[in-house]
Image (tube, helix red, strand yellow):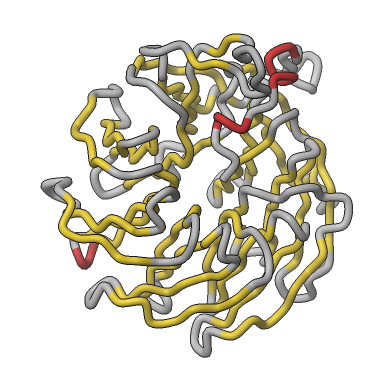
Length: 337
């Protein structure tokens, strides 16, 4: 995923958007803000429903934080943290190490590392597919997807996908993956581990975050050019294009409330809903904070969790914004109605 250190300096000067429907009460509001501290960039935020806790990739560690009060529960050392996948029935978690080209295995109860698995180059996103009972790793630089058996900790399949892989979702025997540099979604059969389809995301530049509404078979892919593209998995056709904010990176779908959320580095959270006519529209753009471009959703409380830090102008000769040490924070957004 496009971590905060890739945020262009332009984002620092973009104005915050306001709720789009004049006169309507907002759907979401900021309910809490917790300072986590530390230094460096960050990437994925993963919610653990069993423990009501968050796994937050933050440079050389993954922070484990209580979702209720932001209390630090532990840290897992890694080498270039990207994503975390949780496998409760094995009592194991898996973290991608982008620099090392490995996956760290850890105990879900003690949070202690228990092993390393060699994968491809620059592993980024990682998910668990309960249907195939495999941990799926998206390797950005080697352009392939790998499936790991969480019991044996062995790589059991490798699928070349011909591009830089970003986030993925799994459903009904398929793994859907955003391919960033080709602007596509790739569909992989999770039984044969063969590439099935490639769907071009017309109008979408550098797709990153991906979410799914299983009831409608709709994928929500967010793009680097301030856009969300909705794709029907049954046909591969684009059914909607909806604007988001600048610097969009992550997306989540709330199956109960039927809302999609896009977190934007400019400092907004775009809330998207489906109309009675079956179209998708922006319900509101809620102000967050600059750099808050990765998120996680608690499907029970419907809370949204975002992370960011205080950002300054780029250092001399750099394009990326500077990060003020000790200001890394967790923002919690909750339904207002």
